[in-house]
Length: 179
Length: 174
Image (cartoon, rainbow over all chains, first blue to last red; front, top):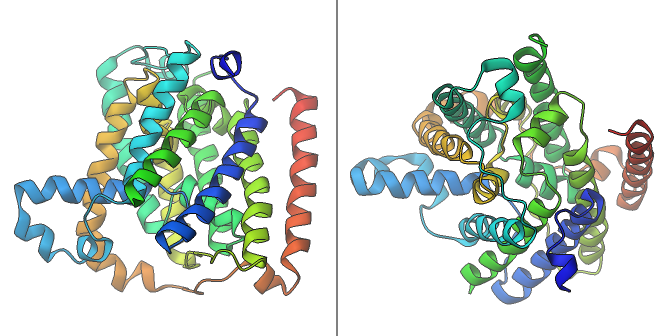
């Protein structure tokens, strides 16, 4: 098993197909053990972590907020999935010796130079916009893109089309024109 | 128990995301510049296999589905915002934490931004729920329902489309 697990990379087709199997097994397992099917997702966790953080600063404000009440601010299944993604990626990168310390990625550098601060500020703004958008759309590439499409949901396909068209147009605009 | 199951699923998911090399800014933005289709190969493979698995289990009565509502106004506006932020950040919510784990330190700023965006959404929610979230809500609908055909025909079409697309990617070396 070791040479396989310590390979630097797997074919994206193989790794992806295994995610398809993982999703199916997860739904089967959570249905039988928890009596509630759990489909892969990630963006609601950011709402919960933001809510937990705000709770330590201004508890009344969180209680009064309609969205935090609706989302139920607590450590749940999906939050543990997101923690697990960190651990699993760490394990895979260590075994395959494919970690790379990076503060400014090459494509970014070509267009905007090597300022760590500029990259940091942009990543923050991008992150804020995308999560706001994901919550408005009702999910991210995990919840809509993977889980939604696996279930043949109209919402999943529609969201994925908007994610991709908007991402492609924006990327062309910000990284394409200076080449 | 649900926490342990979640952690286990996440570890396997994170492992596969890293091995498939889809966590990287270069791969995410490389796709958006239409130069590298790694993330599409990964995602489509997952969706095709999961489609058969999930729908097979559902047909056997082993599981129930959890369909998100097709709220056209919110999905169009939210999806467009997501794409703009995704191109700038170069990560999505699920991949950002994995990217941080493989040394992409700048993913940390994206994660903090996502938490800020989540808090901002919670503040904007009362307003949004009375406006954008009310436009064109078609409920929890599926493709087989609106096309009025068997779900297995829809799945067969997806698989055929996927295989043609994969062949084209490999031919073009994308």
